[in-house]
Image (cartoon, rainbow, N blue to C red; front, side, top):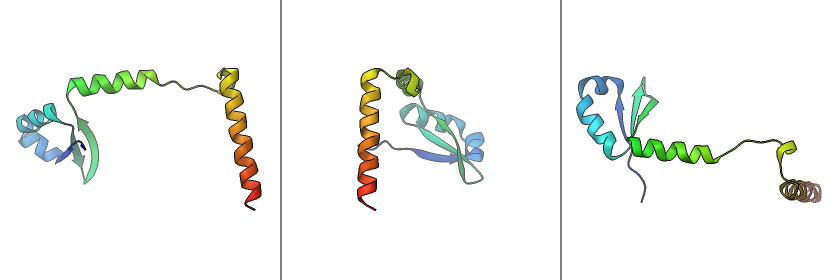
Length: 88
């Protein structure tokens, strides 16, 4: 089931902040400014879950890859290059 995301303007936020906050406790709420999404209000549990998920991700370089992962990466690049040459 898709999550519902309501959208309000910054003017709405100043006029009906209590209602918008109550809604944001149930599901994320987008706040727009000049018809562009600018903010998302969400409950603390959703925020903490997102932060935990982002902590699990890590960036690295080829130099920091394990030998096994580097070998898989090199094989994938070679396979892609071979298929690209074959399609020409």
